[in-house]
Amino acid sequence: MTGVLGLQWGDEGKGKVIDQLADGFDVVVRCQGGANAGHTVVVGGQKLVLHLLPAGVLHRRATCVIGNGVVIDPIALAAELAQLKSAEVDVASRLKISDRAHLVMPWHRRRDADAETRKGNSKVGTTQRGIGPCYEDKAARVGLRAGLTNSVDFESRVRSLADGATEDEIVQVLQACREMSRYVCDTFSFLHEQAERGAKILFEGAQGAMLDIDFGTYPYVTSSSTGIGGIITGSGLPPKYLGEVIGILKAYSTRVGNGPFPTELLNSRGDAIRERGAEYGATTGRPRRCGWLDLVVGRFACRLNGVNSIALTKLDVLCGESELRICAKYRLHDREFDGSVPARLSDYEAVTPVYTTMNGWEDPIRSCRRFADLPNAAQNYILAIENHLAVPIRWIGTGPDRDDVIKR
Image (cartoon, rainbow, N blue to C red; front, side, top):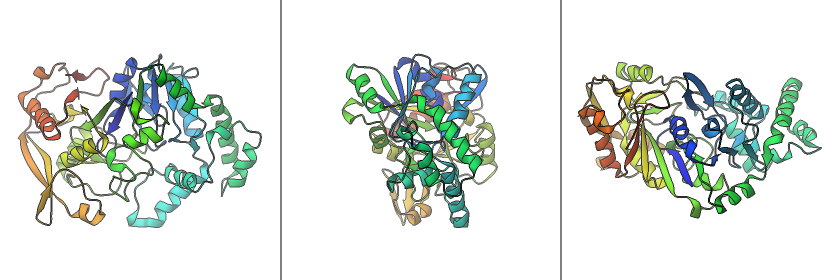
């Protein structure tokens, strides 16, 4: 089994890397999160945005599993399946949805939006897709699970919980649930059968390490486990099957929503990186905050998740920068450190990044297919990252298309 995890605040480019890897796997599994995450892949010039389905769905030999740790918006899933059908990607025979996965309902989205409004300037900056409230109901033991969608009393259960939902919303979500029910099954047994027969299984992480409910920049985090632990609890497979852990690291840092971001560039340089990198949320369309690469975050995430190889994405976005900075340490109250991040929000907001300055490069790199083809400054940038993290960089993204990659 191989796990693919984001090492920053999400939006690292996991979809493209997974799309590259998935062809060699029999099963691709999504384990955590919901429609608040977005994988963007470009196929033949056509951009496809996947919020719930694993990015591996584009590979016709792979069985795609939505695991028990995912919270599923049935209406969003129906729209996603329709998008794939219009792109002539047939998923009907290859999709399996855990009967233990919880359902995001219209009232969850409303509660999410209302909570953000009440918080005012202290809001987390959620996608308002109902993810947090759905996980709240799961923990409170009052949620609806996918396995109920084909039960005779499902409609009455929905109506009994439909806090403030309109009749149109109820009818729409019931229809979407009926359509979804054909894919619902016991994915626990399926995954164990596959693992025991030696099938190659790829686990897709959602979001990134710094949004993890326990280890992220709390409270500016998501409501699920985004790291290696989430793969285990969100699939039902034990750690003994897990082999390689691939960390996805963007060549610079981005963040959506509020919360600490020590290396943020609040100037024209940050704006330029945003435009070159098309840094707008796949789920919300919101502009992402952009900044220099933070290797304190990178090292923390690698240690947290046992990462043993890295895919460095969007290196091409830095082309044209004459000078680059890498945050190698944090300074807090006259103390410097680099192996972990502060747990207390006030401390994280008070850290000062300690930078290493490096030369940039002008030449475009999209046509590069070997490490030696890259400008010397780009090679040095990659080696500096690799040396600091003590983890090999195996993939380097040189452009937006699926083939714009260097494999080392």
